[in-house]
Length: 270
Image (tube, rainbow, N blue to C red; front, side):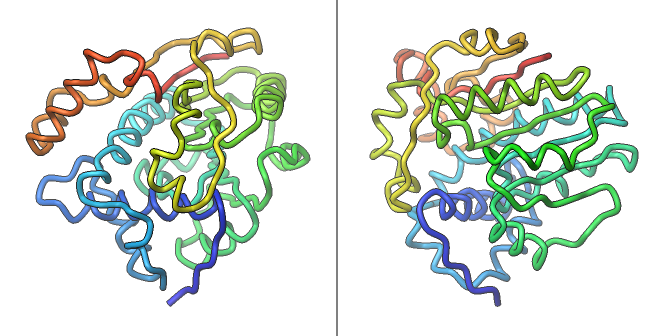
């Protein structure tokens, strides 16, 4: 068993991993991430202290599923793409999406995260781990710049400072001839309410960057393609799989737009 001792925001990645694992154990899972469950079973860690329950796990997989869908669409259109999965944590998105061998996937996170990933996940010829903070921008030199790029950043932007976040976007847009950025954003209200976020609170992490209008990021070379707030993450077929109380909660969000917009999924083109 692998001993895991992470602090602050690095521990929140275990919460999302555990949430996907719990979903995979359901009779009719939303995401069905079996690789996540296999990883959880290999890690010696008290996951219960993260505060993730079967019900709260739903928000984790509902966020991941549209991101997976957008990423799969891009890879179908650009099978030779470079994929940058920024702040990947222990996510098994590479395993879930199984990109074509002509694409090359880079998982980027802190060195200790990469060390654990390499112990738990099998290597692949078209996959590379890069152990670094995403804001130590020298790592970009390890990535080819002659192909279209798919950049995925789930659960990352809110932990960055506004200055680091916008500089990262500038550098990514300048590096590649074209591409898409798929990520989630918290509003400023979402940042203010961070203590209500159980995994963030228990990990003693700090959220810093709130974006109220996704169009704000267009000034850095992006064009907004799609934006979904928390009330619209689920398709009807996914909603049908959820417990009645969870469906009620999601439908109620439609009547409280500021709450629904505390978290958004966004897709940009550049």
